Length: 274
Image 1 (cartoon, one colour):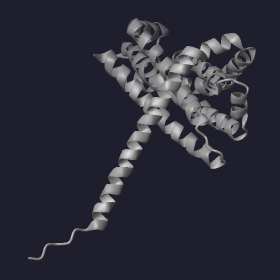
Image 2 (cartoon, rainbow, N blue to C red):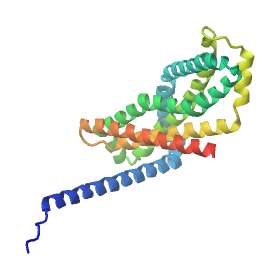
Image 3 (cartoon, rainbow, N blue to C red):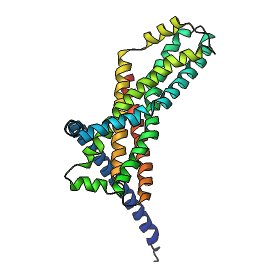
Image 4 (cartoon, one colour):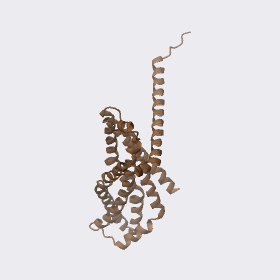
């Protein structure tokens, strides 16, 4: 009796695929564990470092200026355009059914609760998160990180601490600017295109806004800022000894930050609606 010969090449290819898949999963879990380890160190030691070293406090102030001081115009413009679009189109449609009083509900749901934190975090990620990875990666290539270690200083605290907390504080401030511009600026500019009384608009907005919305959005913004910061610092420090590594780490850090933003936003939104 003749038995068919096993296809060793096919079997070996399947084993190689499973091996590569397992290695990728283990590598991903290891990176995730390292990110959360760095997150814990930045939370526990980042603020302590700013109280001890004047250089760290100076870098913290510089990061707030770079992220918040230079980033607020684009955030304000984006918020104003979003508020304008919502008020103009929503008021035009709601006026047909006599529902102008629900414009405030739409602003709370869309601007304050959902799109406001996400859009502000995306703008900070695109403008400052990627730049932070490149900046720290350049420090690795220039041996500045190695010099700090030889001096007995921890790069995660000296380099990461002020950037981490500077990004969190800046994101909270930028979110406040985004909301103010979306509500006030959007309403003022919408007077050119829509006919809405200020009293109706203000009353509907105040009635729709509650403390759970404020707590939820504050939690979102703080967590967004923390994870954007820790991912940017981690991937900046993972840069190898060549410039191509900076490009790879920047791309990888942006993707992981987007995944974190999506997971956090979904989890908190589901928790709010439970």
